[in-house]
Length: 224
Length: 101
Image 1 (spheres, rainbow over the protein chains, first blue to last red):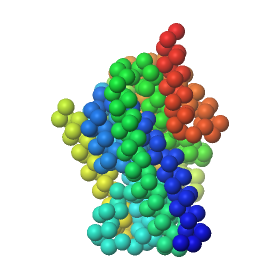
Image 2 (image 1 turned 180 degrees about the vertical axis):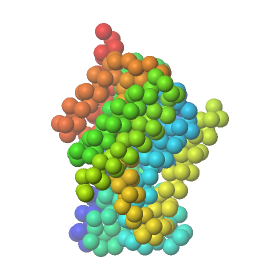
Image 3 (image 1 turned 45 degrees about the vertical axis):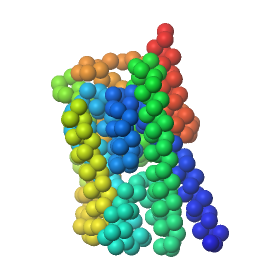
Image 4 (image 1 turned 90 degrees about the horizontal axis):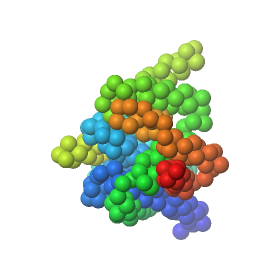
């Protein structure tokens, strides 16, 4: 194995370690929100895309319809579609391998794979990052789930406030641009306006959708 | 709790389908500039909405409480480049402490 191969693997494991441990906060928030340990662990095992998972349990915890939660989660997961498109030529997989690989298409594995010069290093970065996060994410979800289940009322420990902080942490890199800030702000404002007049879950989908449409319109006038 | 399992199933199938479709469709299918723009903006819009509902909503009423304080602490820590997990932990701690008084 060459030195540069080794450094790709070490970098990937570093990202895996840093990201995989977030599973603790997901597990704790999920069981404290009223999901069972089995449900919590199954979500990490089978959904395996952090922002979507946090969104689902956040909406369910607020008393929202689980299907509104699922819709929001799937919309948030739409970025994985485009990660897949950009990784596909680098990975060059047959249909069976695609089925086994798809689960690992997430933010971090794509970031660590897509920038590599050679196909070999793209694969190394993608799989080492994706699989190390997968293993840790599920392990730490279980630990967090057991802890969240044991502590009783989540409000006593500020776990309800932790959800907002977790969303802000996920949003933060997207606030670097003016467009990102505008869209996030409009989404927040519209959603808040809808809270008193609609059921939980709906304000998020309508708020987010309105913000995206406005952001696209603003971009068009911007470039013309 | 069947609705909860139903929601989980929809989320599992939907999220996997998106990942699998990405690896399978030819690049040209998704090359339309409008599609690309929409997908770039969706996370910011939804996360903004999720934050405001999570922080201010209490059922169908709007409340300003320890959650907003915790969000402020999170913003300060993020701007100081504090990593995700300690940031979330500190925000929870601040909310928990604020509720003691």
